[in-house]
Image 1 (cartoon, one colour):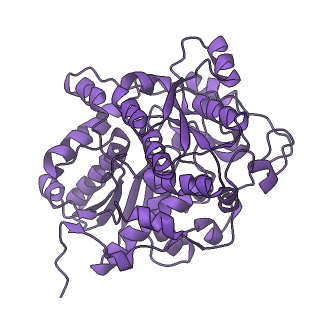
Image 2: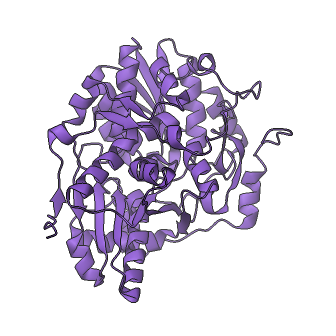
Length: 460
């Protein structure tokens, strides 16, 4: 007899993961090596340690260890807000009239309001353990900056945040939370770095991009004694830390003899999608039963659906290493009308390789007004106001559930609800007042970004 599934499934403390899962160890084709921007040779640890914490460099380059132990200090912090609930969306199922079973892994139950804290606390821990004074970072919508400010406050570290200018102006309350936790915030591009001044000289009216902010944060780390740089997505180390999301979700589902037919995640740089799908991807790579994986990205920043699989710089200032990834070009800057995060020009090298090889099954680009349609519908029936980023996954989860209604299939859908939208109310106001619009880059827009992708003869 099947177990009755509660609205919320929590793990016990004893069931919490004690190790992160490193999907690289099981990939059929490892992603192409990261290249030094000066020599174009694969980076070594000594190339990265001036920028990142030493232990994080080891994790970044680790392609062999399947599981990496979570230090006790990090697990103790996790206990303040983990395990996060796996929720059966009974009310949404009823509203849609679908035979599908819909689950979401809810990561918004902490002050930062998102999954970003899972990696922020790990990176801050390793910085403190190394004896550093502080760290620098960038942030788009502000969730990552908020999470790092909490983590740095906990460990007594200084923090400098370069926040994409359009978000800095749209989301003053995100800035207020970061400052409450002791962070210093700069609207990027700024006049405080050489990279920022160069970008402003060339594009004086720019609204900024994550690529710009990364350039500034990296420069600040390299030129300030006792500082290192931390990043909230894209990097292997971040996907490693975020695997705790999928590990918890899989354990919780198996407790009730459930397994997803479809796994859906919003895709910006790849942190939450990679974290949610990692242990299920392990099944697929091993030839076992596995879900259909869907990455959902904004139509205004379509790196997977319209980008090129190529070596590209990870930042606009071209000071960072080059990664083989799906990219729109480091010079691509999303439209200012784009309301949420998910504005990075590239995609995680891990996810890019899995997508290129067909293990990550599908990528979809969705328009902003459609995303907010889904966000409002979800908020009204499930009682949580989702972040715009999360609502991309909600949009496709609803679409898949409607397909099940039309076909009569009883599929099990799992998506990542990465955070709350309480700092995104200006976007909700624009939607509610009918002022929100969609923007889809033209081919000419994309070509301007593609023109910044370097030509590397002989390097594939």
